[in-house]
Image (tube, rainbow, N blue to C red; front, side, top):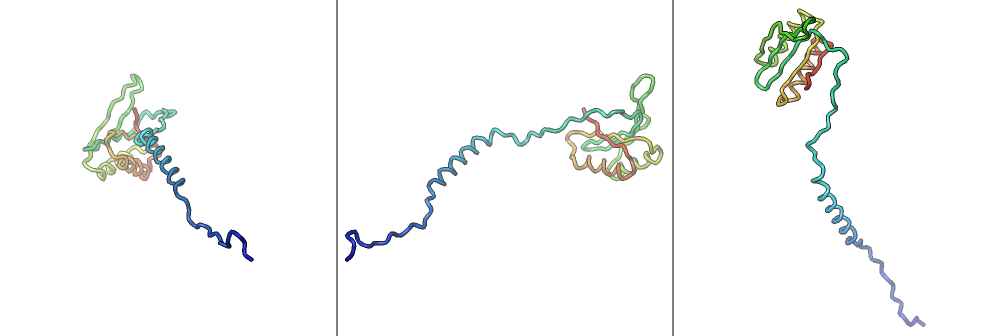
Length: 146
């Protein structure tokens, strides 16, 4: 005899119910859309540069501008503290600047180098000048800051 209900076998569904996942994704999308304008990716918190322990009294200054390079030797007067320039030259390109820096370094190897650059200058060019100054054997190379 068979049972009264019938002998039907239940089939299991092998489908995933995606409606709850869609709801969660929409909530996350709204959260990210609201939170995205709050963060400003263009603001970079740079570390502040402290003053060196003993600033050099005599140094070679390299001034980098977007259209010219200038190199000069600055010496601080010991009596009045004012800065006077012994000589100033301009260089037409990067290669000529490094050639003049090598001449200055060969004449006075104990002088340190200070690089001051315009803020519109590409950072890569400034790093190349610092790197090549170190390759010439200059141990003390610094950046001028405000």
